[in-house]
Picture 1 (tube, rainbow, N blue to C red):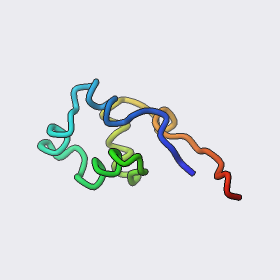
Picture 2 (cartoon, helix red, strand yellow):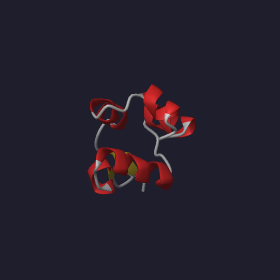
Picture 3 (cartoon, rainbow, N blue to C red):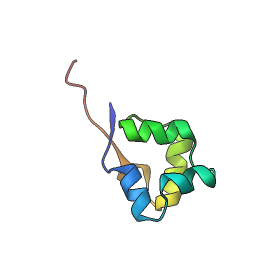
Picture 4 (cartoon, rainbow, N blue to C red):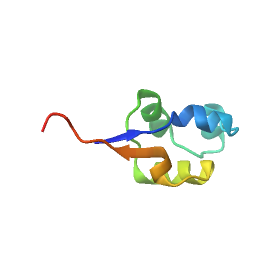
Length: 70
């Protein structure tokens, strides 16, 4: 399963993108912001936007962890 390596919302905030700005400038949708708050994976389009905003590669943001339930 995929999981976040970083706290995405906190990293965005440190880069000057608080949730109000993300909504107001339509940088991320409400569903993506709520998913990030819950620690759930966002879609590929939202991930691409996050990569652009943070100037990071997807591998810097998410990682694959094997599911222990196999």
